[in-house]
Length: 450
Image 1 (cartoon, helix red, strand yellow):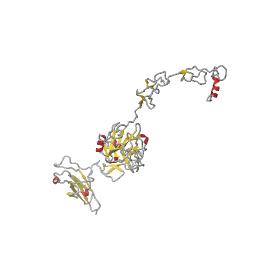
Image 2 (image 1 turned 120 degrees about the vertical axis):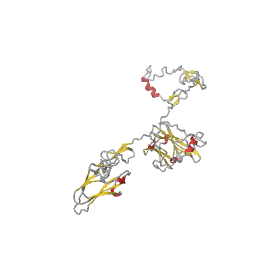
Image 3 (image 1 turned 135 degrees about the vertical axis):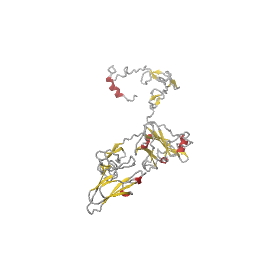
Image 4 (image 1 turned 120 degrees about the horizontal axis):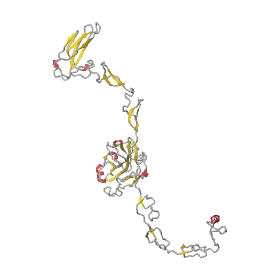
């Protein structure tokens, strides 16, 4: 039911319905319920629509404009009879929408467009119309060394500088001795707990052809501090050769003994083994059928290979056996330490086995030597006689310029007599040996006596 008032002239208003409407009146199929060309109260029968889940009503206005365009005003619109309780009449019938409904105001510089109280469509202007974004929106500042990029107050895009954690280190590179030179791969060490390994990746550099960029990305797995992670190209051969399972398998690790390896974090190289611009064949770092292992307390080395930080098996170091344990030079699997263990040994300089490189006394000091004081070789620090005693001590005057020089003596007993000068140290002849005699001594020092 509804009431209708026409402004003027003779025009026609057609009440129509459709059961399928997708926002475009012209695209829907409409059926007329009746036409109206005068004022009054009217009703339309919707009985034919019983059972329909959705019904849309529309009004089509027709006017030839010969006597000026007219218009209609509808009021007191109501649904009567046996109608569903949830029937809702659009607040904006022409737009087939209600206040607050989403719409498109055809303005690219606005967002969250909705139907307003006057049935127009309008949106909220972007803080940054040129960027079609608001302050704080996510963006990309094209800088690999930043994270959490957002639109700033000046409409620029910027992120928080990314600080590399360096929590992974390449600790081993290996080229196995099984048929085909397998298994091939790397060992990496977890310095600190990592919640998401996917920020790290690897690349292999073949024959010194330069970095290809990151080729393998770790899955988004966690890793505990102190873990060793093994990445190989040959899962079955890895298990056979080392006796335990690998962590990840990728063809990127199909390396030869002259290839370099790069370790990435957030797209940046944080560690490298080998020279990426040089083929390793014939170099000190070649590991054909062998391995290279990082020395303790080194790494990561950034993008520059530091050869001194590595130990090498040499070419064919993994040959000679059927697995790592029986190889000529087994890979020291999982042995890397971030801090070198203090060197133990004998730190007593008086000991026979004093080790100047030792830091911690391990109780190994030995005190060997001649323990008999009657021999020239007597060592007062010796606790164990090593049989070195050979020459008996003969006391006497051992200075050949003395009157009583004893050619058989080998240990001076302070018995020497110098008759030519009762006071040999008195160079000034004043009867005293003091500071004034130093000049004479130093002047005579080095003179060959006849």
